[in-house]
Image (cartoon, rainbow, N blue to C red; front, side, top):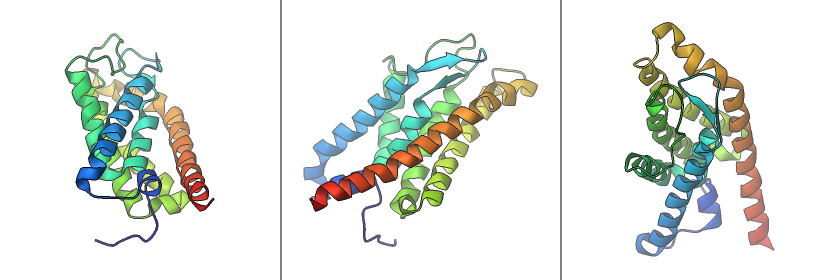
Length: 194
């Protein structure tokens, strides 16, 4: 494994590693915090079709990966899924086709992992690489979401219901997240140097 001399995730830049047990409380707060942020982002929703809503979740998922890294991003999205599975109101409820968006939820875990993995390898230091990392996360969300959606809607409607209405919004959320990461990293660097 290649080591990166400067911090690559927002968490690494903000909080230096002190040891597993000493970092555990901070890890728990950040993991649960990003799960909560994703749950709150799910409440920003509107339906353009009866199957899958447009929400703010993908923005939170991409930030979770870039902020927390792959392992903590995985943990955070797993906590988010577990919270929804046990009945906490963290998923975007509603819609005429219940359960159609569950594949996207599983894709959130994969997206946080891949974005975190790439950011840990220095991809946050280059805006084009960061956008590419987040695009890979978006692709994973759809790679899980679209096949699941195919169980609920006619196959000729999968792209119409599960992809095309979301392209513009997801591109906007991706660019917003990719813009926010370097701003945060630069802000942290400046705070530490003052």
